Image (tube, rainbow, N blue to C red; front, side, top):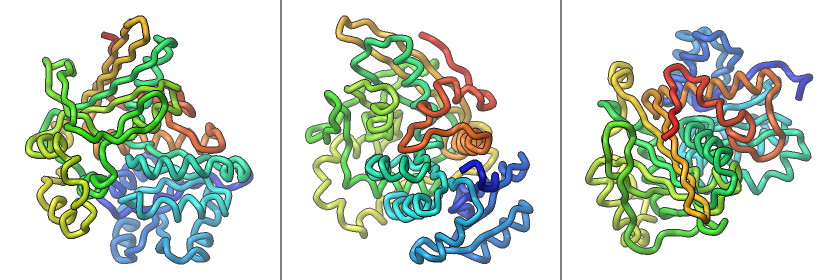
Length: 353
């Protein structure tokens, strides 16, 4: 990999989050190529950023391989990733190019983990989840596990404070993942929740807040990062989505219908302005516990999650890889960059509880 040009490709650059990452990459002078399927949108973004565009889709393997020529890595931002990530990752393996993405989808993580052997043979790193899902939570999980090496249980939660809403792509992905169900990690194994979902109270630094269990990426990734066999994720979710998630197991049979999922997507408020994102902050809480009921907890405070924090950690990940910091095979952010990686982000603070 060291003999390849030090350039990264941003695929899905014209998406809601992709554009924010592209604009920040240009401001920081990073050697990034813009890529996507829409020539008009890509040309406009290239003109506004001064970055080179490459237009191609993921359906033609030969064109995809040719497009990856001359890049050291790909930051894949075209979701839902369950529909796109495999083709990009397989092309990266063929071309000897590092693969990064901002996915939060457990099936995607599982598929990439199954490619670990191929990645090691090709000298390629497969590093999903370099956005808000899962850099902050993954780093906090490793930090806590290092403070309590005997930990057998990990609980993570996050909450947003302010007017910003989910990015449109994140809202769509959330709905697309509903048929997969809500999972937890128990004794090292992924288990689907079959009964009524669970809630609890968490103090994010602004008083106690109700959070709802969900299938966040750490249920998969934090197991690889920490080795802890029992993991649950929670989030403070506005009604009526929290109520729906509470009984979502009852609707799994009908959620397989695309028409219903499209309707649900339209029901979720999504999108935000730069001003709304500036007025929004995000809190992450984590706790580990061992068999002797010793507990250690900590919090992270940071910016808006879906765009600002995601762009921040994704670009920092690109910088690390360009500097030669990577491990081949399937990886997690905190395993490669360490638990303090999240603290490199502007305005991110960690506090022990």
